[in-house]
Image (cartoon, rainbow, N blue to C red; front, side, top):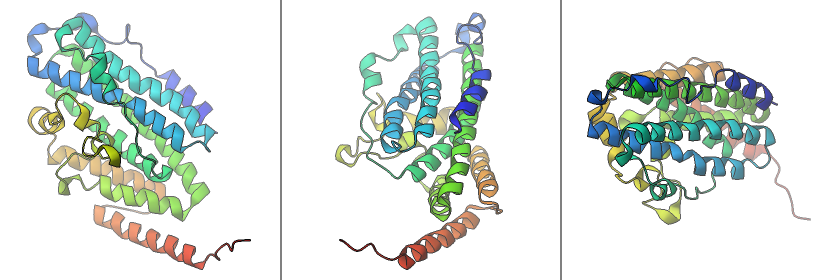
Amino acid sequence: MLYPELFKQLEAVRWNMDKDIPWDKFDASQLTDDQARTIKMNAITEWAALPATEMFLRDNRDDSDFSAFMSVWFFEEQKHSLVLMEYLRRFRPDMAPTEAELHEVRFDFDAAPPLETLMLHFCGEIRLNHWYRRAAEWHSEPVIRAIYETLARDEARHGGAYLRYMKRALAKFGDEARAAFSKVGVLMASARRTAQALHPTNLHVNVKLYPRDTVQSRLPDPEWMDYWLNTQIQFDSVWENKVVERILHNMSLLMDRSFTTVQDLNRFRKEMAAKVAASAAASPEVQPV
């Protein structure tokens, strides 16, 4: 099992909201209304760890190890929402999200293949680490800068934990896992070609609720994420390349093959898809009794 070791590792570096956030350094002159509004949107977005956890537990009922790890991931992700709300409660209570606004992002996700979902969230942690690092650079108010730096480190650790479960999946499922991971990896490393930010909170997850079936579409301002990325923190091609490089680097380590471009990974995806299809075709069909 991976859960006991991951619990110890994450417990050892867990930060304390009262002691490790420099609340006494707050500088009101460095916080604008626009910035406070963005902090609110991030707080609500982080709250969506709740439906994501419900999805993970539902779709991984046969995997108690991973499901147990969700107790740690869920706690830390909800803590992210909580610390952002605490910041607003202390310094901009008029901007704090309401319980109704938080509850709006709790909705059912359609069932999805667990391997693809695991890879999707691994890439999401990489992307969010870079978004929060950029947000910390953009903000000038000392306390919120420290908070975003803290959250970014958490997201990097979560990505590392997901990577451990991906390695376990490769040992267990072989080419099926390679095909699933490379398929999602190509998608998540191709953000330059899409009109929307590629992160789990911005993907459609419930066909019956379409088009209000993304976390972002259920925020008080559904257009907020594009504004945050493009206008506020200016997550440009240089930063996007950092995300792509991390995805390709980790996929190279995971698959024991060098991927320097998304095209390299896409060729591998096609190779794995063909192998899985050939294996399925070669397997004798189970005849009804």
